[in-house]
Length: 289
Ligand SMILES: Nc1ncnc2c1ncn2[C@@H]1O[C@H](COP(=O)(O)OP(=O)(O)O)[C@@H](O)[C@H]1O
Ligand SMILES: [Mg+2]
Image (cartoon, rainbow, N blue to C red; front, side, top):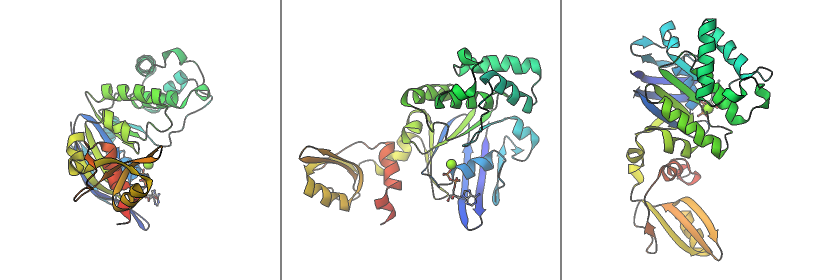
């Protein structure tokens, strides 16, 4: 199983939203992480064949993104997925199944299986307008699975989920990633930290980093420090380094920051995580350098 993205770019009128992205994806969960405007949705829409690349090519196991067979192996949850509030979960699934060309018997069987998978069996006959954000997202994912896609693409699927729903969602995605390619986008670090085998870090249309959590955080390993200082000293340090965390603790201030050169004497080294990396790449301080 292989999704090939080969030097794909997207130029809107005067905005280069995706800049020569190349990737090869195999079975597993890929977390496309980047701030708003990074180009995630544009890339995803091209992978799903709803937006034409300005240049470059996309294929899955030799099928071109434009082929009908490609669409048959694809499951897609758009960022702005429209639900029908008056539909019940079950009727919505039947409706989506008919759009995807499933026959009645198959639609019923798949709907039962998938509502069970996303833990919505109990509310199958309830109207969608009564659902929480997490329940709607799970229904959105269930409909992407109707055709048992080999390539599952989810654009910001955790937006609006509460912490409990988030954990539930992670477990579901981990399970789905066992025998297919799952590509999900998010601007929330903890989403990918826990479920993505491979992290894809995107900024200003370009792919900055690709790899496991250990691999992508390597660039700042040994450069993350912590210290506690008086407010005045903390302010001074905060102007010189990329601050990851700045927290008042009574009279004192706790500071976590990235330091490329010689750290201040009183600082202690700390292991770097994805949050550190994200802030390192996306913090205001870095952008203004
Ligand atoms: N249809 C469009 N026309 C012009 N510019 C667009 C269009 N869609 C997105 N953009 C711009 O392209 C950039 C990337 O947007 P998008 O792909 O939605 O990023 P993300 O999903 O990471 O937030 C942004 O600067 C956005 O304003
Ligand atoms: Mg987006």
